[in-house]
Amino acid sequence: MEIRRLCEAEAPRALALAQQVFFEFVAQDYSAKGQETFLSFVTDANAPRSLRFYGAFEGEALAGMLAMRGNGHISLFFVERAYQRRGVGRALFREALRESPAEIITVHSSPYARPIYEKLGFTTICGEQLTDGIRYFPMKYVRKPADE
Image (tube, rainbow, N blue to C red):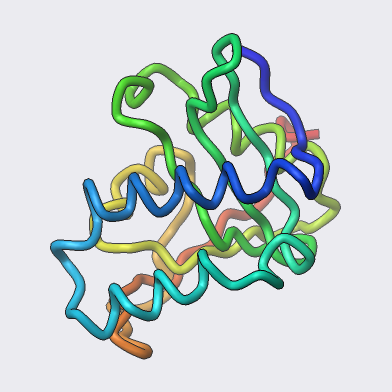
């Protein structure tokens, strides 16, 4: 499995994977408004410019993706069904963490992904929130000495 930062030209492929996995696993927990908000975000032509993308590749296949905003906020994090529970998400997170100088990494986790983030070491900051139809739990990861 190759984990690497993606160039801007590869961002549309990562966004397409995010959209596919979202509708397969997450969308049922969202209202039509929430699904529309998510779709608007991943189809926005400016998204590749405002995010730093990472990809996990098995040969030519894109197995997973993670996108960060700024130095410490995960905006998108999705792994293809066939590659889930195989360490792909953990490897993507470790690579993003390695490149980020932030002491605290944040995410607005969907209800579906919350247990996955907890396994990575994130803690919930407060209860469930709702913004533009998107249900999420604000979470944070505090960098540990072992992360260096």
